[in-house]
Length: 373
Image 1 (cartoon, rainbow, N blue to C red):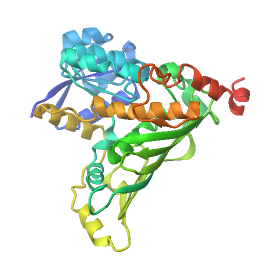
Image 2 (cartoon, rainbow, N blue to C red):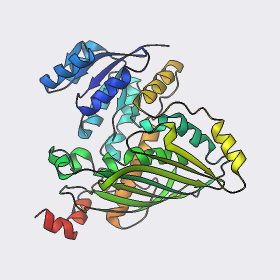
Image 3 (spheres, rainbow, N blue to C red):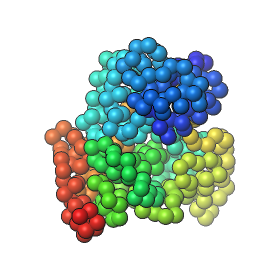
Image 4 (cartoon, rainbow, N blue to C red):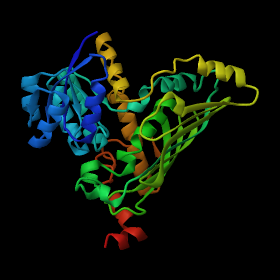
């Protein structure tokens, strides 16, 4: 098994999570460099995590430190251009969410990957627990039956002070509100478990936060396999929770947690008359490893070792980003949106704001006209 040279770009709060989880990969990763425009923050971060290479410029880092993988822990508006620079230099990328602020920007990755021979992956760590793998293999199989009904809730709370950073709560810097920046982890897991979505009907509103974007969205989703789901993304919920429930023909699968889960956060309830096969199927799965960044890091290293495509790669990350775009497009046009509909020429292909439509719709609400005056 190879040890990969890793560099971290951006040394804010999420970078510490990456560094701590890299240290738990059993020697599979060596942190060789970090980069940040804030020199004092960079030095403090590197001192804490014993990182020798210290840079304030990504181009210099790539040329001198020569990492195998770059972790992008910068603000969202910087992800795509930094990813392209790394890929064109032949360096694999693991980017924090969202991977890009629009489908148009994201689709630039294909050329960069081809040119540099490197691969892009997005941090969707909830996919990488044993229970998630077990649920994915059993949903739709004979013991659990096909999925019928589901719900996916990201009910979080962010006070007004959370948006004091000037780039938060803006279309240009974050690409959207909780749909893009918070609920994306949870509905990515829903898509991972249920497969391709077919159609979205949604609403989005600005209920209480003085932001440019929405602070709440709700969607009704039909999947290609016929399952129907509701998806809610909120920053207005004092009792925070992240929940997924999937009702199959013979079993209900549930996950309730907040920012990360262990196996005991999952539960499976058999339908009457199906107790034994459902329990045997679930308990027959390996259920030791919880979710988390280190689980995704190790899965990425294993794929690279084997010469296989990296997990949570560009294709599946795009499906998740397209789903977010569809929520916004439906919410702001008042029409259902089908998968594959948002293409070049569509107003929501170049931005989640729909060329200003989202701002106009949100600004027309009663709250926006009074609270933001």
